Image (cartoon, rainbow, N blue to C red; front, side):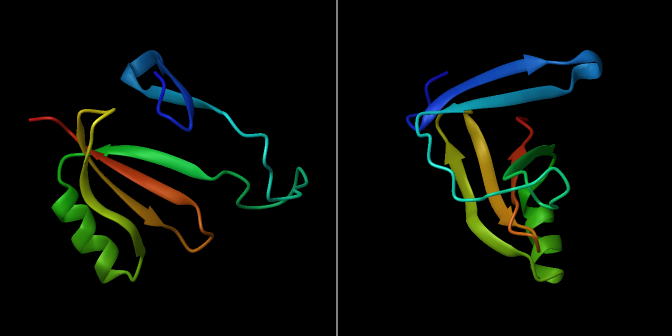
Length: 97
């Protein structure tokens, strides 16, 4: 699926887990990392039952909300983005009801 910034490939793994791989259109690298460096991934996503509940928990624990609840046209679902203490972007995708 072409998301504008790159091509996204979706795979379903055993047990129903979904894997998303992104082939970015840019070769820009802003980090010089080594095999033992912590926090070398940029993004992880989870499917949740309620974005409202996740937001309450994130606000309670002081997490930085990068993108509040919004409809994602590509996923045909609502998402929210949060930054963890290591600046890893966490995406929450609300289950379709």
